Image (cartoon, rainbow, N blue to C red):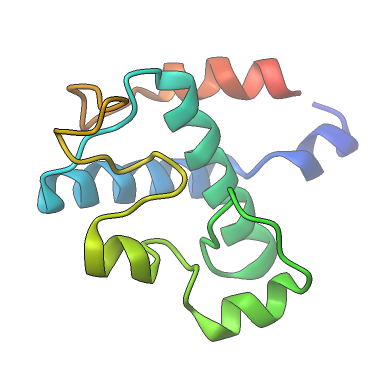
Length: 121
């Protein structure tokens, strides 16, 4: 992997940690991943990249003028306040069973994550 590719993707250890977090949190909150596993994979990769770059898993699905300030404010650090308070996940990572995009999975394989990661490189 070239230097530019490695800077665009999270490291393997952080990716595995974010995968484990997402699976555990989905099970704990009775939420499910998106029916399209590539959505789940892209969001987990984004969380891991922000964890590596910023020290916190800042929501990857929003635009920020100042990411460091947003991390310090903690509102959009995953799980964000809307998710914790109302089970509203803008990223479609944690979906309630009645959501039309909700799948039946609360787990994703490293292979699925790697496949999406390879397509992003």
